[in-house]
Length: 131
Image (cartoon, rainbow, N blue to C red; front, side, top):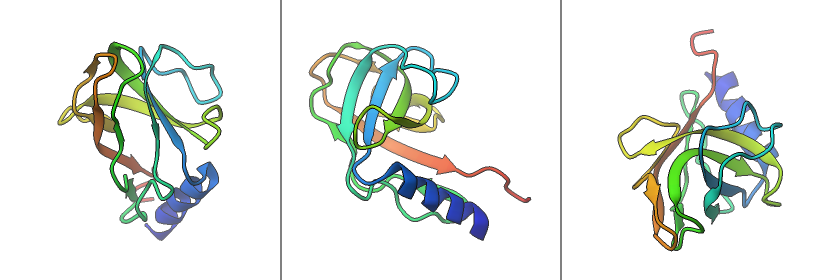
């Protein structure tokens, strides 16, 4: 568990403070090295300390992640977290409505342009549990 926690905390440090979250339409790309897909529906400049300290091999969001005015209309399909430059993808995953079990859960996956969108849950679990 100590190693899993250390890897999670080190990864957050490598991504950097003030990361940028983009919630996008469509299926997520194969990996962060693959070009963006879909439309950026929501762009949130995350707090400087955007994740809490890892515990039991899991990190959870820190602070409030809200976009007061969505950039475009569409159905949320995946998210990408970028370095503070907003260009270099560092992390991606599934988005679902609250209670849907995605890596990231938001208050409403069918987004209208100008709508407020709030991330309700985001957890990041390091692999190798029990190893």
